Amino acid sequence: MMSDDLARLLDFDRTHLWHPYASMTQPPPVNLVTSAEGTRIRLQDGTELIDAVSSWWCMPFGHNPPEIIRAIQEQSASFSQVMFAGFTHRPAIQLGEALLEVCPPELSRIFYADTGSIAVECAMKMAVQYQYARGREKRCRLAALRGAYHGDTTGAMAVSEPEGMHRIFHGIMAGHFFAPQPQCEFGQAWQDDDFEPMENLLEKHQDEIAAVIVEPIFQGGNAMRFYHPEYLRRLSLECSKYEILLISDEIATGFGRTGRFFAGEYAGIVPDIMCLSKALTGGTIPLAAVLARESVASCISAASPGEFMHGPTYMANPLACAAGCAALHLFKTFDWADRVQSIEKQLRLELASCCTLENVKALRVLGAIAVLELRELPSYQRMQEIVMSTGVWIRPFDHWLYTMPPFITAPAEISRICNALRLAAQ
Ligand SMILES: *Cc1c(COP(=O)(O)O)cnc(C)c1O
Image (tube, rainbow, N blue to C red; front, side, top):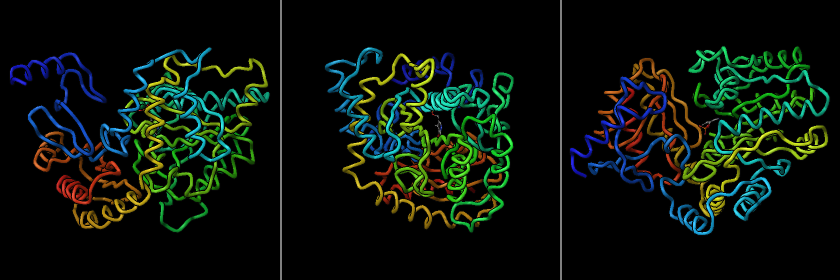
């Protein structure tokens, strides 16, 4: 690419294209990507960066895994989209079969959606419609945790940390209930009083709450913290006691990221509704799935209006479902559990020295996730310098510096990621 051509492209981008969480008039710098493969993102000038955030946590097998790309290509040769009302197709069915193989057997009814946020919207609607179908119309609010992140759409924002990035939109958000963030961290001794506020909330508002929604074990986007599995276990028990549904948002944690295939396994719980997305297609193409218990699905279907009131245009898109099938096949053949375990070990070992840095408040590691909580935010400019000098793509948000590398990342690459994090934390 000629350099004036590059300048023109970047100029157009700067003037016309909005980037995530960015200013349109003072846009932060962006790098032009020309290809990506495995752990590497290649820029137009030939620079190669190790993708230490799995492009927002969705790529366990790295970029462009050939098996998944081939599946998309093969499906596109026959058809790439058809409405899912009145039609079905092999990719949707085969992905359903593959999901049932890996999900808790109780979760046997599948609703496909397009993205994580939309899956959360569907799950919330399912819970409300379930209570409605049971004649409990007043149970139309959700309970959630402070520090939660469930997505950027209006419904999903309304169950995310209310003082966080979404606070300016409070005027259009429904008033849900929030319990304090769990204080007992994963690996610490359990304290009984940690669950009390949630227990009280559920008892007091049982007649208004359709469901509790949580990110199991790992609160991501708004907290970057791991909490105690006992919290989740108690939550599951209390929910059943009041016939409040439990929605588990496994969008970030699902597919091995925390060391278990689903994070809910740490607590031995089975939710009533589970949301999956991100790694579902190995990070190649957007897709989400909402899995529900048979009892939830049949209750909704038995009462008027008898239908679940949702149906996106691209529901069960065949290309995305084909990608999902290939990704689930990879999980079967790839020793992800071993890989995640050795990544965890290496992250713990090589990041331990960061704890002595003045700017580091805490280090947290679980599975293929490491978080350094900082006292002072690094500037965009300093981060860009570190990225370019180390060849490692890291992207902190708020005061969290973290890595969630692809599971295929080699030990030498993990060492480079740890070095880059240490440098950025200084
Ligand atoms: C990323 C994420 C979402 C939102 O998914 P999108 O595909 O970005 O809409 C929801 N919940 C959790 C836990 C997530 O990490």
